[in-house]
Image (tube, rainbow, N blue to C red; front, side, top):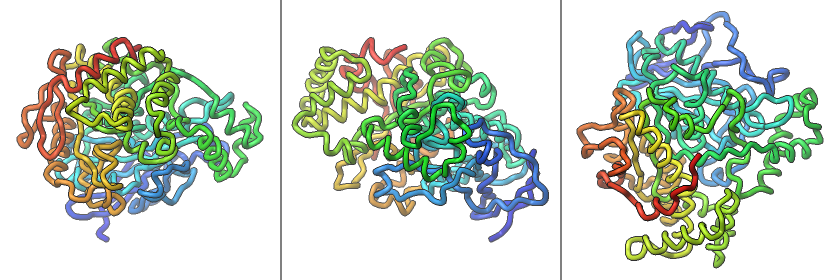
Length: 498
């Protein structure tokens, strides 16, 4: 392994390695380990160290909650509470002013890490002459337990601390702190939108790419946290006793509680409360508070097929699909009559174009409810303040699990990263067109550089507006679609708004 040059950061010297035209630094600590008295406390800036820190190996990811996805993708290891580190891929740590792409991973705020091979930044950094950063942050109970005595949204505060570190240090790695794009998928998409609302994050980034960001509700509830504490036999507010519980016991209690709430995919998540997440992103966008942020957001055609392929939804969906759908939307406050009207609209709009099998209608409605309609609300809000506002739809279908996944949730990630050869993804992206990945990489890179995703290998991609609603469709053939699924969109008028 060829060592990199020694880099001086604000907290000490580090040394990574060189590989195929890149300098790579892994496991850089951006905060003190959140252990002992720092467990369930806001992140603390990393103290300076002596000598040169070896940064050639990933640091541990946060303790992981259980997920059905583990049977397909494996489990990230090692896990540790000492997880607050980041990773950097740069063409050269030469003091250049390259655009920076700062990635926040998904995983329902309970699993995942910047260490996932799918997020290897090599191809993206090399292709775009950009700097790529991935991070770890506290997950599940360690990052998002909501109880008396515990500061809220600790995982979100970790993300902000990592972003602050990048602003202060990325110039030493050939990156431009004045040109940072924050991007993320699913919980990561949720996270980049949350960062848009935080006053402490102002000026830390210039652009946002939100991939498959789920609906953000305004409900602040400690129901799940209370159940976890009861499992642990810890009284609310007894933070000292909670800090003494072995982390494995906390995860065991968390897994038991989340298993009893199987349809609450993001049972532990950032909550809209205090300055860690002060308002709904849609409100911030509507008010013009993000007018200076270039904005790109999109979804996958069949997001929810990832979930209907797994338990508990796989077993729940049978002949009573419509009843389940009404109940699902009812939990979010949508009246039964309106639910029935939406289902009827979807059936009629899909007739002759798409399958009207109950499971397909279910997938289409829930995909739009959780992902596409909230995305449209944000586009509509931001467009009136920022001309660089773009929408995409990823529709390439996966052959995985005998084709039942379609263009499901998270499938676009290896296309964006150029990691189609990642071992854990073989079944899901077998036969995937490399050219599609290259086109998507170039769009993300172009946006990070200029705020405009257009490049020479795709058709002209117009900015979003409420007349044409232009959307770039990423598939075997890339093309722009206008007013896509408009009858379905109109069916949600007056809903999922602030």
